Length: 286
Image: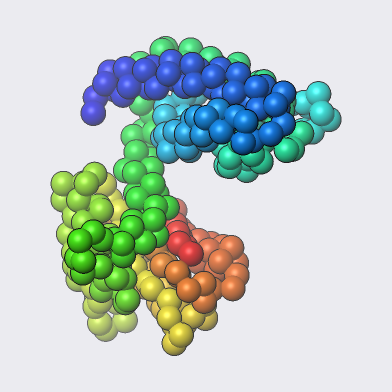
């Protein structure tokens, strides 16, 4: 998309977002007044649909806005250093949580001001920065990977006695992810050889050459847990640093049985292997 197309889409999004957030506050007030969810079931449903809409779209369009939030002290006494909308749509998660916790009252009330700030910012957008352009494909890949488990579980439940698609091993993960990447990317190259490293070469699962991104897939199992997966990826990272014209290596670890006990620690240990030439990003889906 051109910068003008992106600007128009962002303006449309934030204009709609302001209307939806205003409606969310109205629904919140009505639910709080009633106190009984069964008497406001329609309002609860609508409010949760709005929250899901923000969860699905907000990060993508916020990237285009230069409006940022300075550290402020809310009336509750809580210090906020990030966009309070994030607290509502991710930490709050649903309207029931929001209505039973004071933590989100101030964020809800300040949300409109922040959305208006984003709208004013994207309206003045002239062109994307180099960093913004580079991040666009990463945003799309992160979204795909964050929903991989939802897609895999949905394919288990097929209609009319159709055979389910069951993700049993790494090859199943590769096949499903390949199809999902095709939705957003025209050139997805599968299992390409890397340059020689320590006397040998190996295959990378997916290469997005136009975007400068490599994707390596791992699936945990009884015999491939945290230690084994970590060791394998450390070797892979060293090899893939030699791949030409690549800026980012995404290590996708699918762990549906939750064999990884410390995902944050594993992510930190692998991502600190990033260099100026190659950024390592780890996504663990449990």
